[in-house]
Length: 177
Image 1 (spheres, rainbow, N blue to C red):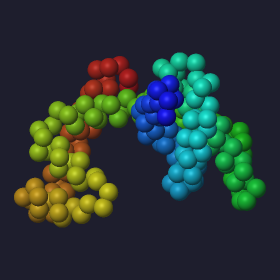
Image 2 (image 1 turned 90 degrees about the vertical axis):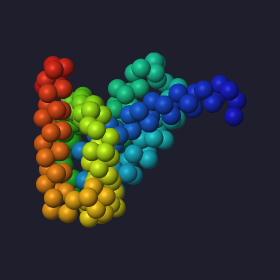
Image 3 (image 1 turned 135 degrees about the horizontal axis):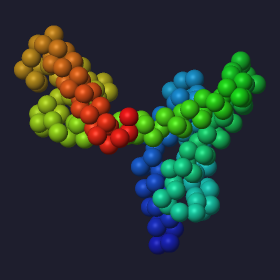
């Protein structure tokens, strides 16, 4: 791969990976199932890569990618409309508009939560994060913490409340509420 191609690829990959979670969440709000969202995301990734040369500035990647994602998701839904009953186009557009508006708020919430998680002592943060990992058994995390399963659930509930209050405080302090 030539250096120029490698640079373009690296620039694309940086923008895509930084925004993939938000794009996936956006698409997930528009299509019926996670499986459908995964299919649509594959198409979006391909279109973004093919059209990356059309992006005017790298700092506009997120807005541009959301526009592509919207078009691809709505196109996928229209194609599926031939197979089964789906929502009307005007309703789909309304949902897409609302999902886009929600993205900034959700991103602020994610960043506030990350900030609050970073403030936790390392052991507590590790336990909270481990409790939400895929395919993890709570009894194993409870054992690691030295608590019974019941006591661990109570502790986890208190931690969620602390993180929720911290997240709300961070968002209020940044004027994002």
